[in-house]
Length: 279
Ligand SMILES: C[S@@+](CC[C@H](N)C(=O)[O-])C[C@H]1O[C@@H](n2cnc3c(N)ncnc32)[C@H](O)[C@@H]1O
Image (cartoon, helix red, strand yellow):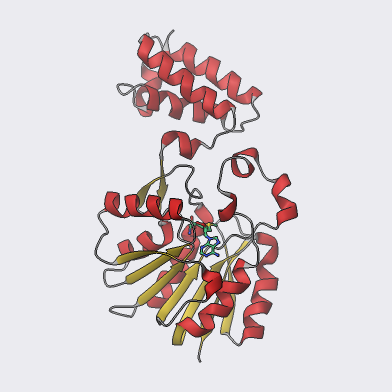
């Protein structure tokens, strides 16, 4: 089978499976299966024959994607801000809108030499590691209730080499946030309502951990707990569902946060809500 033939056949199968960017994904899966055919060079070599080992690896990748396993889990890594993070079923795949959460969080600690930051529900470690990567002095505590997610976050901490300033703790936020005090609390908490789960894409619904998706009041719990955990003048930055921006703004107002504001994500949807705790 040639590279060109493999690409055409796989694209057709992925279209049939309901995947929008089938051709692009076929290219990425082919480049993954075949170490000597970088994606950028595929089109220069469409007539080249694949080896049996490459065909078997490509077939396995395409079969996984046909079952709607997320591309990021098959590739095993995903870009987030300046980092490339390991991704697998242990944690949510970092999303582009969460890059805006990091942007807003950094804005509030830019002038501080050594801010103490708490990331609630760290998953892959995306937010915690990106903040430590982009702020030289930030000391980040990252908590998650999922031991699996924390194990993956630990692997990402090692992979990115951001070791000294990110502490990972298994901790359930519903127990409050303890005695520690922070200049910034940031979180992308689970925010899918249980009755919305069935409406999600199969990649999310059937493959990503439900503990990372289903709300169970996590946003409210973080917002309340942060009133205890923030130093006076500290900021809370939260990711929310696009439909919940105004509701979460109201929640922060009611809890006594000041300067409450919403920032849209890259697609213009209300996704990041922040407020300042004056104590
Ligand atoms: C939406 S994911 C966010 C992951 C990561 N911060 C990101 O933005 O890609 C939410 C995370 O919160 C964690 N989580 C859910 N309930 C929790 C709880 N009660 N206490 C602490 N972490 C929790 C989940 O395990 C999951 O890793």
